[in-house]
Image 1 (cartoon, helix red, strand yellow):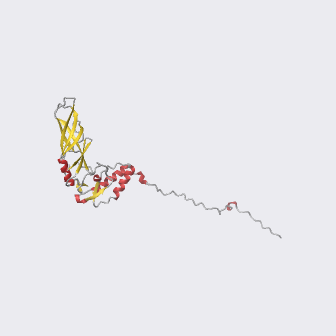
Image 2 (tube, rainbow, N blue to C red):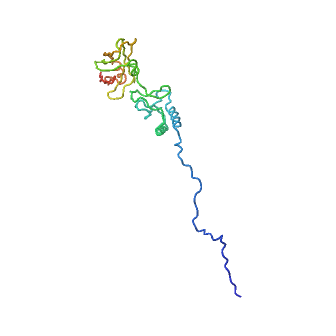
Image 3 (cartoon, rainbow, N blue to C red):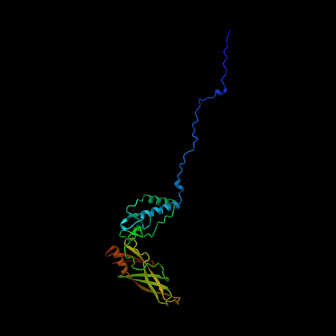
Length: 248
């Protein structure tokens, strides 16, 4: 007897080719690496900046103060001042962030550099110690009172002869010297920009145009210079668009 062995076909479901590459794709969600710092608004930055500024500038006495916060003003001795032991790292980081975002951090001031004698603590806030007196003349504003046109300046020792013109002429007119900035401009030589206050005690009834020469005493300005700088010196005196060099 001859036996025949019949090979049974493999089950179709077992014929899948498993030799192919394994699918290793990562279907998990990627971590969120977005920079959330861009979500900070100017309100956020300003609030932190104000709090940090208040912290590093707080003082009890002048000896507590001693760090100039550069970049807080266009005038060198108008920059803010911090305590001598303050850590300014966070302050400058916030200052840079605010500048980048265009935030109004409340910095800025007059762009002059008045002479200082050190640091001071005023109302429990560190600042500069500005010397006295700066009251050589009143701090009246430019153009106080009646309009005045300055026509000329002429120096005569410690006196400055100022040619002026103005409307009217029937009433009696008065002039006073003003020093609006109450500080010397930090140039070489130093400068002082003066102005004139002009008024009348009675109504002006004339429509004419009057001219006269008034004399400004420069002795108070000289004394203010000596109090700050000491000794003799030179001041460029500016008034009404004109300038003279006043040496003593």
